[in-house]
Length: 251
Image (cartoon, rainbow, N blue to C red; front, top):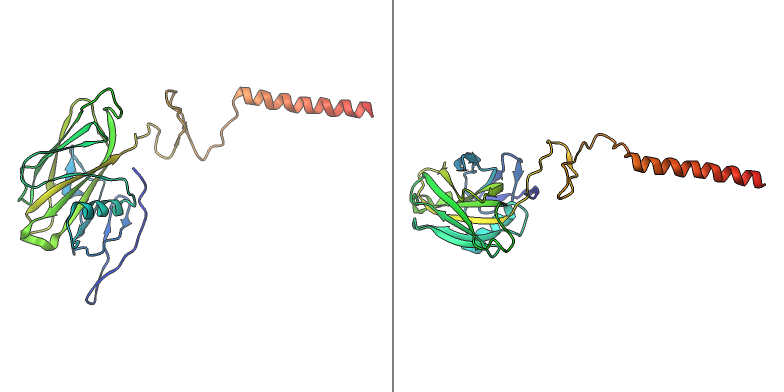
């Protein structure tokens, strides 16, 4: 997942300044212009039994169009590469294709509730064409409040480097939104390519060549030259010394 940048934006409503922060994991602050008074919490939404890695919102933009929400997701991660898939607002599963052949399906039967469960599934429609499963993706799920509390707005919950496995092809999630009262208007899905997590220990640098053995480098340790380069250096030094000695004799 791409690193998040830090922005400080103050939204003045009357005489009150609202400073909205998000991402408890990375302690980031984003452009939250027009945001509501509630700050999201990563524990509100889970996927495959794990809470969101970070969240942004709640926002109360002037429009909840698909393009506006995509802009909010991009601004939240300081990027421009999120793809909007669809929104589920009537309990009927919705399906869209990511990168031409990865089919993503979202189903939420608890629209209209403040808490509930949902299902996320995927399928590779063309195994002969890249990308193929398994595939790492970044996921963002938007939860928009319904008419019971329009001031609650919308919040986005992010899951970094989620693995779309080649079996099973489905997982479940849950939500328990903190804004009260609230009725879920719809759930939206945004996706982009993720990064395969490194097998190296934290704090080390992964120098592994694709297809080769795992190579993890400690940034605080000066690498020791391998035997072959060391031999070449030694040979060069000896050759230089012999050449200097012959020049002196010739004089």
